[in-house]
Image (tube, rainbow, N blue to C red; front, side, top):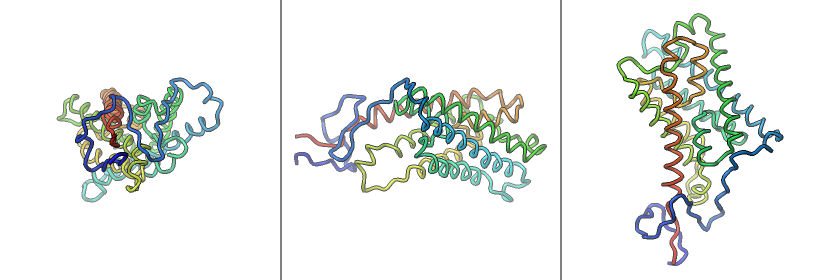
Length: 286
């Protein structure tokens, strides 16, 4: 039937037509592919919305380690995992905070709260390099300040309990830690792309999607899987903030893993979503 939109559940493979790789399928719904963000946009520096977005990213990544690092330290301090929230509670703290912070800041800065997410969106040309660098700086500063406040509250206990610093657990080689960070960040950034895809929202308007919910749930699931391996970084700012405030040699030994892994995972997620997922046609032609 000419002009009939394909039922997404049937998939696109029954049609021989394919759009060129790297293009996005258009639908007859109210959506048109936005142009890619310019690489450099000096005019942003004169806009209050630009600076407001950076402040929002700072505050979000300030609050993020405050809640999550305190939760981690509470679990470490307990003599029995059954007497506290345990690994599941830590995972819920991270996932729940991301849900809340993305919900609060999505309309201001996009709710990245993570340099790896910012990097993935930069590769997809969703924001300018100017804004991406500014976000990453503010995210790192926020995480450092958040971890610093935790240390101020905890004092000596902060040092004794490890300060929430990410390290590769004993018994795991560095390669396992790197792989866990790559795959974990891929899951997160792929979820971010899918949950915020305007074309998908236009196409699947019958499916209500609250973007912060799947993003927070992805963070929760990744933490369940990789806390025993690396403590779960998948956020270079969070790892850096804890390492700087804790400042012990073993926290710095593995720091490269918590930057290289998330950035590789974010790049792979961006490429997969933009080249593979967004290139599938969803509409038949005569």
